[in-house]
Amino acid sequence: MYEDKTLVCKDCGKEFVFTAGEQEFYEAKGFSEPIRCKECRDARKAGAQKKPRELFDAVCAECGAECKVPFQPVDGRPVLCSSCFKKRKEAEEAVD
Image (tube, rainbow, N blue to C red; front, side, top):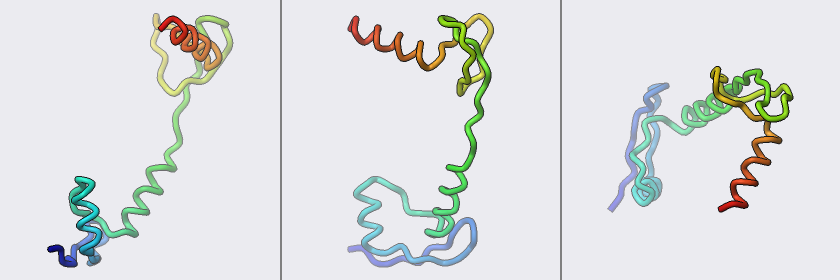
């Protein structure tokens, strides 16, 4: 049914084996075959997770507290601090 395949890594050019068991697993999950070796996949994942999240200064529209938010505030659109956001969300859920 499945046989081990030798593939070439897109990043480093090194050959790696895509085993029959891995092929079966990938097919069951609906994944396409890998284009990178395990080392390059791991390095890529580690690099993607280290990107720091940019935070922006804002003033809460409800309590007036200074806060940081993960998006660029837009003039004319209210921003809530995490405490006020949580309170509003809980109030909305209570209505539903």
